Length: 178
Image (cartoon, rainbow, N blue to C red):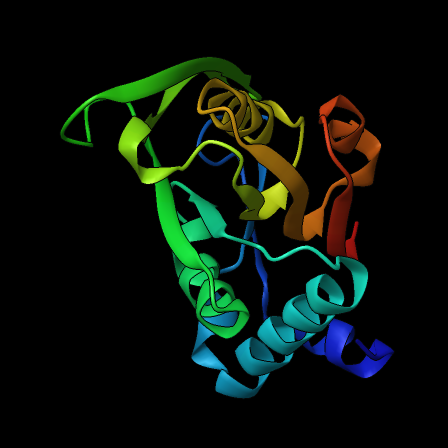
């Protein structure tokens, strides 16, 4: 992705101070979706990266609640892979596996429908942003509980100073580093 494209996306993102609680600086990706060219650029970049980096077939793209639901299906479709959401506790029917994680501002629980992932599957986990790595790490734990393999974690934005990617169990690709 060219410098011009990255700057365009950075300029579209909005920053909200003290959200969702005091002391948090929230980087909002939703305004990027107002610009279809920016979204297309992001999706093409991610798909090209995955396709040119990994020889193995990606079976499933996992999107994290909730912004991962926006990027994940688009990437999955272009990779010829399935899409499966990871949701907050109590939002999915059927048998689920769960993982507890710490966020910058509290504790939460992620769940994944156990039947949604075949054992041995190759998985890409995608979300809009990685900060401390708590939610992504929990998603990786869910994949392990389903006896599948996380091939890579993909993020639109990585907050490098928080070093969240160092806590993950597979390679990390981030389009933008802040």
